[in-house]
Image 1: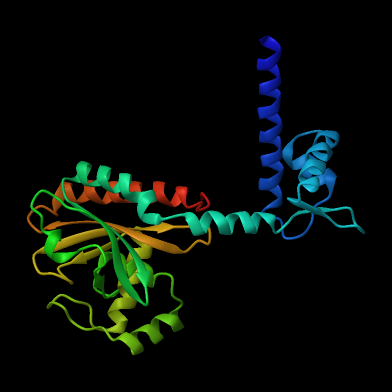
Image 2 (image 1 turned 120 degrees about the horizontal axis):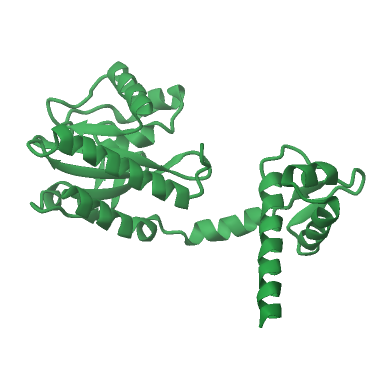
Length: 262
């Protein structure tokens, strides 16, 4: 029994070392020498060579025939594509959305961007049911006047943002809606500094919303998580606590989407 336990432990250690080599090779701009790999991984060259040969045999690593240097193969891209195709952000985030709503005592939404609009893909209603009218699964909303929508605008370059404004316009949904490109640029700068977006009666009078972006491995915002409630509740310490909860939830989801830690 002790022999089986020892063998299992050694097997796990080998896997950890192989993963370590993969994580060193992944950001490398060019194939690496065995000596450099073993040094960065803190393991003997003989150990690194044994693991690299295994990865090479299974098609996960390529070796340059002229320089003998090692690099990851496109098999990782193939696997990543398969995982990405099966990954449903709504299923991934639903339990977190339920927990967020419970912690905040308010309505929560998950939205994605499609055709330069925010599309709500999941909604957890709060105690007063206000989102049953405002936001429903499948409902679309403009980007410039919603918390989640502003997040998606962060993905755009200045030229792309200008083209968006020219194409879609900045229609006023309420008297508080941002309707000028200059103000929108200022608002996006504020969001970048603070790390969250707000909709302060810009989409619906009487409602305030806090939203944070879910980032993926491409370092783009792929979804937005938001908490919405009436003005008389979304203020003071309650608003501060909600903002922190939304940031934590979006951060956890970003980790699940392989967003690199800073």
